[in-house]
Length: 326
Ligand SMILES: Nc1ncnc2c1ncn2[C@@H]1O[C@H](COP(=O)(O)OP(=O)(O)OP(=O)(O)O)[C@@H](O)[C@H]1O
Image (cartoon, rainbow, N blue to C red):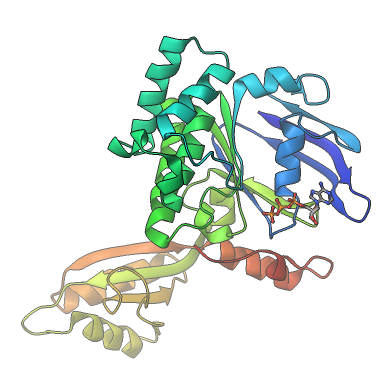
């Protein structure tokens, strides 16, 4: 979908992109970096809106230096900053954008209605945008990026300014752009954590340089941490505690109880030494006459992995560069 080769962008006082080489395939890809890392600059070059100082890039097999117009016909773009006219309605604005992309009037109106419904704007779509909440404005921006049925969309910080609920809704919408319509997505964020549920692939940049590009599952490989949850019984009204003590008596210590996780207080975490740990847990739970609700390997969160790597890396400081929220 996207390929860059030694791509650089230098402004008089700052190098926004520094010999960036990266390949991005279909699906949902997160582009993560702190504010100023070069994300928006990369998007503008990929759209053919801003020339690179050095290197080359292709989007959908088209050279950004010469085929910007064709790229913009096939790619949707949701800019980071507020850029909506306050005194027109969402419908009027999105129809206008659809017409600008070359759709005939009837198709533009139909696509606008479908797209606004998809992003969750209903009766409000006839009211002037100036009265909208931040979340509604973000949805209008998303709708105009999708209205011409692009093959690929670039979403620049779509969760900016949203509260946690609004952020989750937006991330769900982004995921559905790919699952429901088969449109590939490049979505930027300065929050590593929020992209792990949404993206198939994550590209991390810092100071315009590529820090890492890998699939989300590679970032979050399974660990040897086991999470266990058991039922209570009449004999053991606190089943979790009974299992903890029984495991301890057999030399297996459990850590914490999954504070912050769903079902916190009922979840025991322990390090699996191999198959025998699974057998031991099964036997202990059965001997106590309890039910095993779940026994599963916990996955890392991207941000934990990244923090670990940062600690081992001497020449890069992603810890300071990349937020871990979300
Ligand atoms: N037109 C410009 N002229 C001069 N410097 C620029 C220009 N555009 C961007 N920069 C600088 O290039 C660097 C990268 O900016 P860019 O906007 O790409 O970062 P970003 O990762 O998108 O961050 P943000 O989310 O804050 O926009 C920053 O130091 C920025 O100040």
